[in-house]
Length: 382
Ligand code: PLP
Image (tube, rainbow, N blue to C red):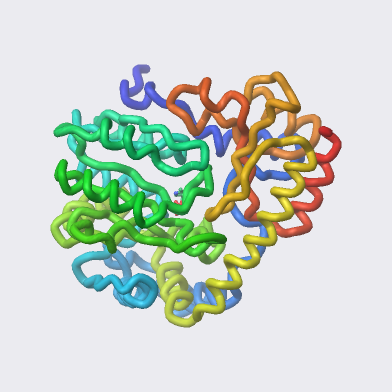
């Protein structure tokens, strides 16, 4: 039986595949970015209470009113962004669906979408699913955008640019000057910024600047985030979009027909988290992640990997060329099988696989004990 040509142009998720390899070998899974520690008690209790209160039927398709109100307040409190919770928010099944719904709603077949590489693996398939052409732009060695290459990539065919800050996999946090340069190009070429800010609160250096807060960008930005990383609930599938009303209206339609809506009781619980957790929750989240980062970073360096500590997000992209001549996919499977630590092959973050051949990505959204055990296992490499 034939399958659609579009789906033949990309492979299945390498990240999820590495989780299966990790499970087969009983390895420590530093491949896929999900926490191995508990979600905040307050959210869990609120989810249970919502189910007991029979909030078990479809929520309004673009989001439960309480969650949209809490989100509007959050954007005001953290970023001084005025957001109309009635007209400018869409709640989705994770940031994953948020990006896909937004692009399906706003990008036409034949349009070009600029994607920085290395990239989070969903963006290429997202572009292809809407019939668009991904245009890949390199980043600097420190993970920052190559602004000359960005300017060269924009044209009258450009419909949008995807930004992910703090970045997976590089850990780069886009600076205001970098965002202003990208903003100027978006305005000049009448393009949309699709910004994935799922790691907005997992930050060790610098400041998180939503590109929507840069002059002239609010009306052309789709800001994606969600509960997965901030509240350690990747399995709940609650994502969020902030977009100007015209764009939000189009996104509501694709979202409605794709998924109808995100889980109703879990939307209530995320709203409770946003309403009740104060700044100390967010600073502790970042501080705890800093400690985890340092354990993994020190372990990787001691084992002979070359890498830099990320400024945000919870990944380290590490070069293993001093340790092995294997290509990245074989090295990642070998490391899982022989040393019991799973990572993601670097090539899955690049359009040309050669560029990631000596890299693997490790996630540190794990307990300190898990990371110390992983570091001990990696020490045997040296
Ligand atoms: N965006 C980025 C950059 C990610 O790294 C991830 C998960 O690893 C996601 C989106 C997925 O988010 P969600 O669980 O909300 O779909």
